[in-house]
Amino acid sequence: MTTNITKENLIQILEENPSLVEEMRSLLLTRELLELPQKFAEYVGYANKQFEAINKQFEAINRQFETINKRLDILEYDVNQLKIDGAYLKGKILEVELPGRAR
Image 1 (cartoon, one colour):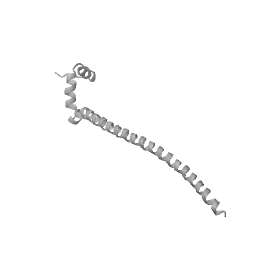
Image 2 (cartoon, rainbow, N blue to C red; image 1 turned 90 degrees about the vertical axis):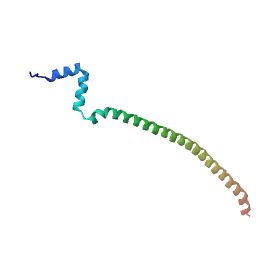
Image 3 (tube, rainbow, N blue to C red; image 1 turned 180 degrees about the horizontal axis):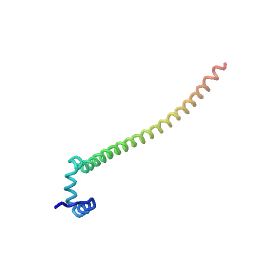
């Protein structure tokens, strides 16, 4: 007795028998393809850990830049103050030296 199975019949049989779907899958797909979902999930976990580590490093770098920027602000203020003080001292020196040169 030969049974003629149509595509529709096969789909209905597979929908009604999930365990049969798994058996067919193991027959049709290679071991590598069957393992792919698990391997991908493992890779996603690994990649997420790497991204977390990278994010922590960026946070540390950002904190370092904040510190550097604060120190640069202080340095800029100090340099400007030195310019002012230097100009003041130049003026004082000229006040002292010029009257003596005029004689």
